[in-house]
Length: 259
Ligand SMILES: [Zn+2]
Image (cartoon, rainbow, N blue to C red):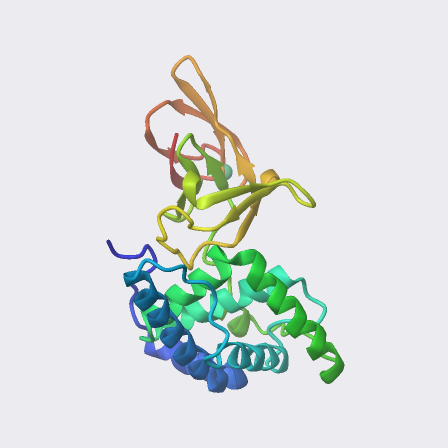
């Protein structure tokens, strides 16, 4: 089964823009992809023997990860004081984009393994790395306002999440995460960690965490359903089907979702 993010159209003009706007990231990310790709193959080999994969820490991956953080700071796509989850999310957007320029799928699958499946361990490692960088990099809190650069790292999900009995989906993309791939968390922010721990069908378009307050639970009564427009929040009523297509009467936004 293909991974949900697997088929993409390679856009060479966007690649040129990426290299122009993010020169440091462009020069450090090939090494990150190389080490991730090797790390992924080593997980696969271990799995043949049914052994626990774990995180390999011996192939240069963490060193190259560290260099990519520095590059992201120097290219001003992130500020040094950003949350760890923001660092990981911006890196996710960068890796997805780099993959779309025709680079390794295995590298992306290792990203999924490391940052979704082993999210708490990887966050711990990243926190340590960033803490050390704070002593090395001064004045790195200025982030870019350039629209072309920002468009390269814009989120690949809409943030208009809905919940069904099967999982959580995005109204404006076809991202859908099954219950078994989610882990409910309470404090400090109630929501769902996306782990892909049941299907291992990593979807690099998805964030690592969705907070409870971003998720709409459709109201169903008498064969009708009430759901809100992802654009203007207008409450819309429609007939209840397993899969519905809706057009907002107020702003004409179209969307589809499962119920
Ligand atoms: Zn609307």
